[in-house]
Length: 110
Figure 1 (cartoon, one colour):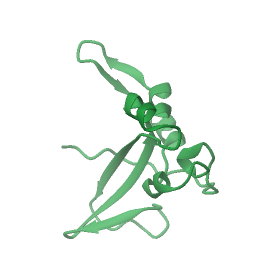
Figure 2: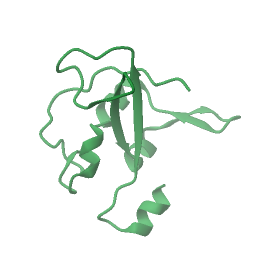
Figure 3: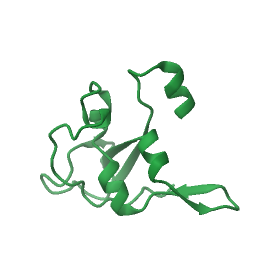
């Protein structure tokens, strides 16, 4: 993905999008971005690929897997809609004025 980001140029930023399935509608203000689809609630977060690459650690050399610890994920992740903003938005290197810590999220098991 970093290669693709380079091919598209400096005005583009590759991101990983994380989708979390919530059993019920979270309390008001708990998440910044929630969608409803077919009676299920989902929260979205995004992480710029280059930030993820700097933060990731090898989880299993045998399987070739990596991970980012929860505290670091909270720090480097942003609402998905921020990925659509200009370079001055959340994934463009500034906080985008959000100023609130991200909620603790558990990954959606597939």
